[in-house]
Each structure stands twice: as C-alpha cells, then as structure tokens.
Length: 113
Length: 111
Image (tube, rainbow over all chains, first blue to last red; front, side, top):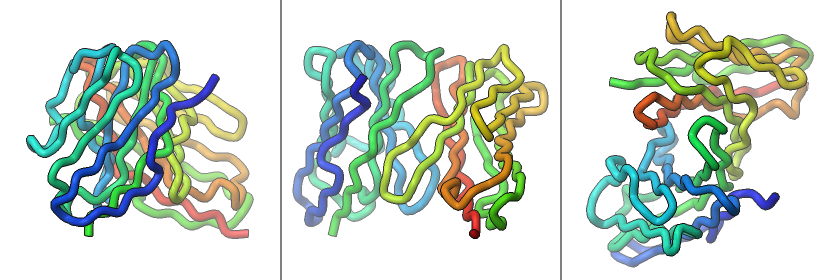
C-alpha cells in the first residue's frame, strides 16, 4: 500500500507570505494527525482529524494556522502569514485506528526567511 | 503533565556493540508506545509498537520493552551497524489519545 505522502518536501518562503502544506494519508485511514518539529526540539502535536472532523486541535499554536480535511481524504495545513518561528519540519501521520499505531509521512521542511 | 524523556540525547558506539536507548514517561495511563527511527532529511519510520498490555516486542536485531509501572521503555539494538545511525524517537499514546514524543536519541555507529 502507498504510504503517507506529503507535499512539498521543502518550502522556503518569506516572512508574511502564505504557505499550504498537503498530506495524503493512507487510503482508508480515518485518523489523520499533524505534528511539527521546530528548532531541533521534540515533535509536538498540532491537531487530529477523524475523517473530515477536527477531533482535537489543542496543539495549534495560533490562528495563523488553519487545517482542513476535505471529504475526509487529504488534508491541508495553511500558515498565513508565516513568521520566522514557524520554520521547522511538519509531519503528517495517519492510522486506521488508534491501537494500530501510526504511519508518518516524510515531512515538509518549512523555512521562513 | 504528560512528558516523555529520552536518555541519552546522543550516543556514539563502535560497530558491533549492543546498546540500549531509554525512554521514560510521567503518566502511566498509556495506550501504547511506539519507537521510530528518523534519518536526516527523511520522515519517521515505525520500528516497534508495544500495546499497554504487552511487555516487549521484537523485530530482527531490535527489542523494545515496556514497564508501565515504572514509566519506562527501552530499545535494545543488538550487534549495531553503521546503517543503524539515525535519531530514535519514543512516542507515547495516552488513553486520552494524546501522543507525546521524546526529543530523540541521536545514534552514531562508527565503522
């Protein structure tokens, strides 16, 4: 089966610009998660979708971040406007159910200059 | 507060050594624990998943143990190889579905 796909793999944008990250989970996985790792620190949870619904978005840092999951398939994470501290690696993961563990994508490395 | 700590932060060993990576967590109400590997510039690869009812899982040269009562997990790597060089991450899923990652252990295996 195809894994979790993230696009783009790298993005360099200027402060104040908008960037949209995309995640395609494994087909049939209802659960989709976004995480990020900034400045070499531990990976932190951003939010969790169950199908198209946001189950938990407690990790979203502020209202400059907007996540959507159209039709319960792929998800997008938009950062608008981007700030320097948003630089890091954004990971997406999916799981069929919580007990089966997670499959992670390769991540999108975002650099805000 | 649910925290996950990994020790050591970095480890360098000669090829062929057996080694142990440690992960500790502060809340014992866990659902499962997963060990990942991250290679530079790449995503996370799942190595082993231990359910809360299990004590260990094995895959090849890897063995992961779980002791919920003491809040600890170890990842044992036998006969290490240069290809094992990577960052190893411990991730704990709690019963409230929160998932917490440790900061990782950066392993270097020298030929």
